[in-house]
Length: 167
Image (cartoon, rainbow, N blue to C red; front, side, top):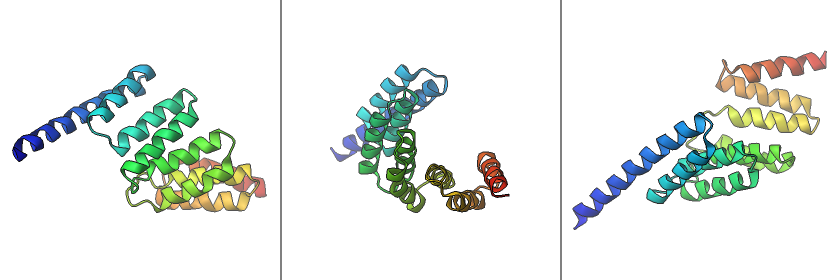
């Protein structure tokens, strides 16, 4: 009996992964309705933090930041160590014009045990500091981002722009 339940779980995991990959492909080609449906099918098979986070990301492409935030909260419930939904919540709060609310979420992303790419929350926190008029703090965050990902051009470009403002 135990062997059959393991087989069913393995099959569900494979099916969830197949739906997830198909959803991501649909999302990347801009078919958001299909992507949402496929992420939901993946989650029905096996709820994962990744599928909830990517479903949220897809909703954000439609401008549904509140829905995206809800999905990220679900991701955190499934796996609190997964950093992506924390960063994404911060990003969505910035988009909603609530940058101060984004700060603790971005800090949680920075501290998350399982998170790549680690430089994103620093770049997003720099965006917050710019909105708050804190140029020096923004520069510090961009430098932290570049220490983690020296080749990340958007951070380098923004850092040079901000340094130019100080001259």
